[in-house]
Image 1 (cartoon, rainbow, N blue to C red):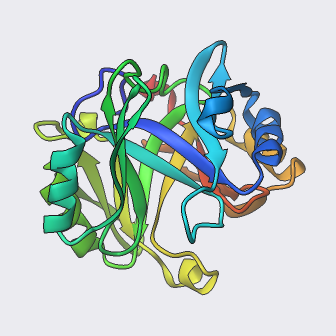
Image 2: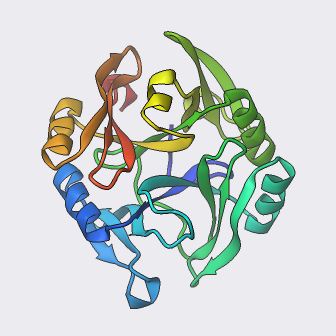
Length: 264
């Protein structure tokens, strides 16, 4: 499971890029009760979502050329963003922008995997990562939907040395991923093939964050009332919990999950 004891290859940050920051802030305040704190005028509109003064995610305007749609994007820990960039290139991924300094907070770089899913890395400086995970309203899981699961898994194993383990699911295979040296209990995400329904709806390869919630159905109702649409209705999975997927008012997809009581 996720932890704030960040290790190489594990998720340590999460960003929402959106064409309308104010609308997105209003939406997630309604759904999760998040506060928004600007990073200051020099940050170009970027800021943080917080719960009780603890950062749970970042948000900013879409500034990347050619990117207009809203999307959540995970960051994975690296000790050396430049070395990771070389690994991404060697493994067949795309470099959207090379490693750059973010004030004294750390260094980041942005990529696309060989199937087109976008992600970033964060090399910590003063900012070590998210302040809290696994609690209600915070990041709990990351999931990759891809058009070529074997190719995607080979890529991420090459770049991050992830440990992978297949887990059976109705109609397909779900692969758990965890940092190098970790086991199933250290898994921070999963990889699955995009199904025909999602492809027909226009979904391409992407990473999807799941946020822990105390009541999946109540959160789903708030997400819809605030203007979002249901992508996957509330569903129970034994030993996993009750989860749903939503598309927010700006088009970004995310999941919510109420873990089983034993997970806490």
